Image 1 (cartoon, one colour):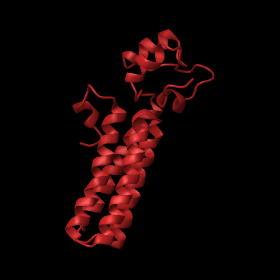
Image 2 (cartoon, rainbow, N blue to C red; image 1 turned 90 degrees about the vertical axis):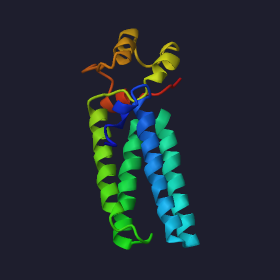
Image 3 (spheres, rainbow, N blue to C red; image 1 turned 45 degrees about the horizontal axis):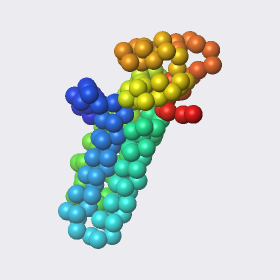
Length: 166
C-alpha cells in the first residue's frame, strides 16, 4: 500500500508522497514512546524522527536517492528496535514496519533504474531556464515518458534525480 501511495495522490509529485510517508512512519515511534512513558525514550525517539523528517524534506526537491536512503535507514532503525526493544510494547510493529520500509525503498530504487521522474513540478520552473534537458526531453518528461534513453553523457541516476541547477 505504501509503495503504491503516489497512485492515490496523482496530483502530487511521487517524491512528495513518498517523503510524507517517510515523515509519518518516522513519527509513529513518537506515539509509541509517549505510550512507553519514559522521558528519555520520548526525547530519543523525537530526535530520531526529526532526522527522518529532515531527510524526507530534502527528498521532496532533492535526489530520489535521499528517499531510498531514508526508507532503508528507517528499516534499519526498525530492525534495531526489534532486537533491542528500546521502546516498550512494540513487539509486532518493528518487523511489520521494516518490511514496509524496505519494500518502498526497493520500489523507489526500481523507479530510479527505469528513469521515472520524481519531480514533475520542476519541469515548469526549471525547464524554461534552459535546464539540463532539451525541449523534446521536457515534453517527454511532462508526459511521463522515458528520456535520454541511451544518450551519451547521461546516467540513469542523473535523469531520475534531476533538480533545478544552474
